[in-house]
Image 1 (cartoon, rainbow, N blue to C red):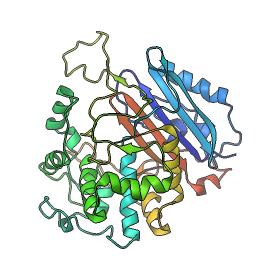
Image 2 (cartoon, rainbow, N blue to C red):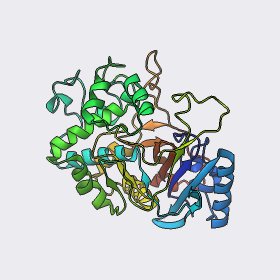
Image 3 (cartoon, rainbow, N blue to C red):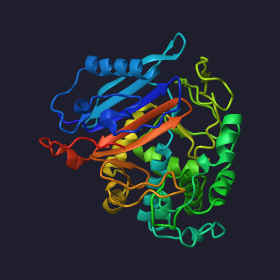
Image 4 (cartoon, helix red, strand yellow):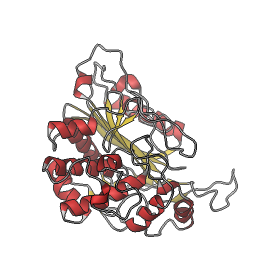
Length: 384
């Protein structure tokens, strides 16, 4: 039986990681699922013991405190489980909640496409329709925002945010602050001429979606996306709170900022650091492992969208587009192994998304239907 769905949430003790591979081998730096185990060409269902052995090996190799994994095939669970401790003496459990990171981008892009299907807006609508005061708004479309081709600088890597977050990880940031920081910097490239990952795009897009939907973003995402997807454990919060039971996170990423010398043992609990800087208010969310799986299944199958809108979201359209350039560290060429859809990452046959914040990292992915049809192919999931 070919594997179609897999969702993973990983907690690390020493740093906040970004996932770097497709779901067949999720984040080589942190999680080492064997490529053959979950590739589209897999012929046999691995046992729970096999999956757990891989989880244990990954935890040992990458110094992980806890790991939660779910593997699904054809809409049914193959394995759901957890290893390690959420806190000392408190085992991790598969029903624990954690932050869902960039999966909120997937939800926002899905919401945008639903509004397109309802003829309330188009992907080529100019940003100036809603925020004419923003720089270059008359040159930037909603597609540019959703596909990371606007040219806006990423506020996350500006000194104001980098220093602010590490000096005060409990600070509450507003969408207006984040937007201002991002757009106050020069465009990194002319809109539509290059590709560069930028959180600024989705903070602005979230504010646009509120105007189109006529309701707060959290309400719009819940009404248009979370409830139709059947998600029961995913919710937005304007505070750092996480619903119980909580998967706790730990990190040493502030070592340099705090002046702690290399070699001195150091890590701190980061579970309740304020995530308001990560994206727009209303899209800062928590979830569990099962909702991750249901989300990517819904996106991969186009459950909420017309065929045209689903294709716009998940069919690779940027392969060969983009290039590196001086002054834009995020700029890169989109390849078959990594290209960006609308709020999703296309990684070979995998439709994926990543999540990472303050010591916790994860990824979720689904194999395309056409990839499952090539059971005799030598193709393997591409690298992100």
